[in-house]
Image 1 (cartoon, helix red, strand yellow):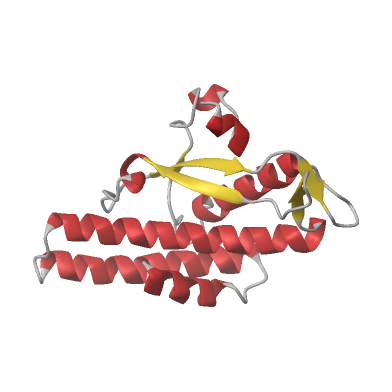
Image 2: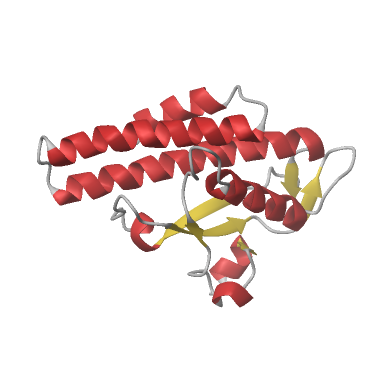
Length: 180
């Protein structure tokens, strides 16, 4: 997972435009899926090894896409801070098969988002943390799901979050502590 994360992060960190990032993510996923399939079919690796590798790939791509989206939004709106003046954190939780490291070749990924709570960014046009992280989550989902000539990177399902489609897109870490 660490090797995958380093490779994809270095590949997308220098890209400025979303279509370029999406294309790089998709190319990387295709290349690594081919490597995993070789191990699966030719080397006859155990199913647990294959599903774990597919899950690690999805995890690395999600983290790289999150980092790119964060960087772009931070450049525009500043760094989000909590009410105590500490940099606010954002977490992408993997649920379902990805959370259990059991993805298969055609699985969608089930995600949920948490952030540190009240506060705002320190940019020229500050945003509340809720707005900043809402935009971050939306941009992340867009990077993963937007369809290009290469297809999309992943299908993202957000319905496993509390209250499904009627629930919030993201929750504060305080809400998570209180059982949402």
